Length: 212
Length: 119
Image (cartoon, rainbow over all chains, first blue to last red):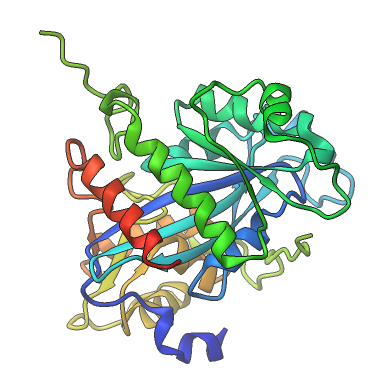
């Protein structure tokens, strides 16, 4: 830690005024940490949120010291986009039961990129369901694993039951350009949404729809 | 695959660090709230964790998430400490997004431009 802290780019540029976040979500081992690590300008960091409530009853407790808590890891990285604006990417598992974590994570998030694996497409449903429940718009990126079956995007779209407007792209989480393109596609999509569907960043959970 | 490294083997349990509190004194802290340490207040009287937090933050701005990550503290614990340090005037924040409502599209455009410039 000390050596990393000694390097200059640990800290934000003094001119940075605004920080925004995007979520990178997906099931276990789909490549979230790789994706975040590929794009981050800092050594990716990990922190954790200790869940004391909802997880306790349904979790596999083998090997856990304390039966009443569940730990959810958050891997995150940072991209300075210009002198004033910095983007944080948070990679997190999308399990339904971490409700409080999801409230925390989605609050203020601009949107989410769902990473999916064609070998285990069905495992992406839970993640997408959580995002829909929280009203967070998302795009889907198929992380390419070489032993994975090469389906056409149309087939995958159908299998995932995506809305026609939901972007679906291929990406290689190990590749910076490919991963950047996936994020670009997500943000392009967010820009097409009416303001009422965009997330409010602070404290206004239902947004404000103007009637007349 | 992510190696499972659980920073739970701290010498001091979380509830000691926070004086037994699970919630920060304010709930305005987001993961990406940017923190800036003031350097005119002495660190005397701060517990070791708060002192470490101040030492981490003094050289430059960091987000709440980064502070938690660097100090190997769960986010919830870091928020309690940060809120205390805000109460005592040791830390000030930059709002995550200044009242971002109609400006969301502008921020998105800025994000898009920034990402495209990286290709």
